[in-house]
Length: 258
Image 1 (cartoon, rainbow, N blue to C red):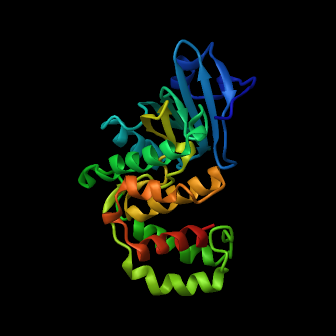
Image 2: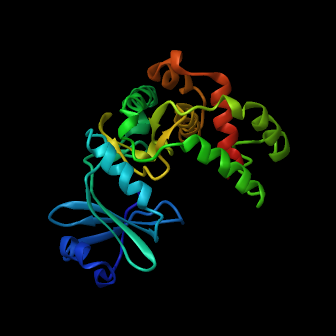
């Protein structure tokens, strides 16, 4: 995880958060330009995420939902002001999937990564706070087409061919599981390969399992610089639940939404 010690004026934060973190050492742990993430190191450890107002609403709800099953950190404070959302969570013990030596044993990492995904997908969908994620994601493809912002690393065939293929496959998408929404190695926390929980759940909800399966294969290739561990991940998750066309559809959605 990224950790850079910074000077930060806690008086700029809501009082409910100030009461918890005043006197702590603060580190910048941001890995996205869209949100600021701070590690709060004091008597206890927390993570504080700051984003535009309304942008952390889903993440707060999904984090609380997964925490109720022991799969995510506890939410300490969720608050907003006129411009920003603030989400303060307890820090899970351990390190993410690209830290703490986890990359040194890629076979075990891929296996645990696949097995752990099954825990999220086994959660009861009736209690999931966000439904209809597949329809939302398909809508995002059309909305994004107006700007033409695509990820050619994911869809090297180009936007036109990817969109044509998407139109042929979009009817295959279903909502069948509670899913993470951004199932990448930096978002799983482990203690020496023992799962302690998941973070960054803002894209999650009830949707198509293949969204997580696609991102799982993508992150292994991206972080390990090889596809050699893809099959270990898929076998550990369970091949019987994987549909090649739906997996391809989720690749196209990911690429076409940039």
